[in-house]
Image 1 (cartoon, rainbow, N blue to C red):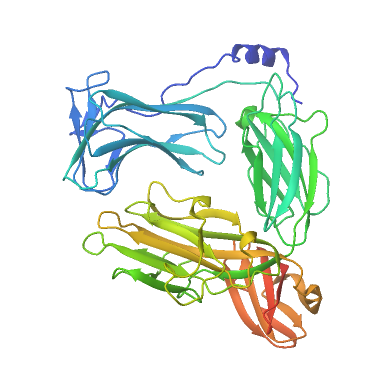
Image 2: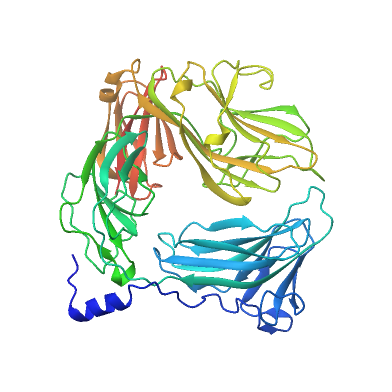
Length: 542
């Protein structure tokens, strides 16, 4: 607990009232213009023209009139300004949107954290305020106030106009005492390649701003954090420890872990940030433990050079799934129904038959990017009775699991995780996964798929002795690692996120595999024998 001396107590009392700081957006009222350009703002993103408007203003002498003449998204971005993670902020701007096609949107572009995308303006013949009140996310160091402009008409009419004024970003500078209590019901449970932490938020006179979660996999004890010294996020297990800052109200956190490893976690609530951060350290912080399971990769496809063992099937239209050099790492499956205009299409990208019958748990995840058009015609489906070759639109019973995943909104060329879902209920002997793309003559998006991962934990039917039939040494390794196996087969080395990095054929006996392309960290090494049985062990690279 922090010691509070008389001067500190006086300061605490004086600052216990919420103080709102000054607007951090320079020229947020658009009063300053140089050669018909709004000072401290950048207009970008395509065919956008801004002009000084002195007729229609929300307040003051001038506003900013925005005209864009193409259907692509446009941007009006402020100069960057510093932010402090964990501080409550209030952001808003005013829009005069008397255009059936044009829309404005409040966005906060953070450096070091996820961006915020707010609501759209509505078509009305008066000023309206778009607002955002939230906590600056963990990791954010600076931000830009961005106003985005969109066309929402089904038939682009050539131009759109919206007037904006008085953009504000204010920080709340309250200084609070340390939290009254720890959270309760703290628990940890393995779930595939992750451990899920849950808790019930702390209660009392002083609620936390956030929690610091610390973990280790070496069985050691924890050193309590120190007031005034923030602990940065660190989710890499290289040194056997991690730390994560999670906002009050979230009450859950999942972290990637290694296979068959014991983990311990503790949690400390705190108020304030920076050099006034105040952790609760008196009493006993909750501690929980969990052991991760055995992971088996059933199918991993990064589309690094081609579709691998996935296939494309065209039901309608001339456009088809194709390979493209985008993604992380480069290589993805891409579908675009636009050719001189939006075209009518239905195209499927389908996995090979996957035997999931021996799995005790099964998880499915992928990364994707979507731009242009909308998400309306994009689907993710699973079947346990498809025949593997006929028209999937008329053959097989397909379950739509699209709603379980997150899709980009608005569109982006950045590859984002779609999420991970439990698909154990589809653990048949011939399970198929598919991405279905449809487009119309008015809506044709571009959809790019990468890093598909289907994995689980071994169950009845998988030889438990297989784990004992291969060994890896030295471990940790560098430059090369030895794999000792009794039968021929293949060795695949994956990153924790599921990217296939090394694929080698091995023979009975000791096989040396070059791993100098791997950076320091934790990897999953999968050995599969000629019968298709496989097992996974953790590989540490130093």
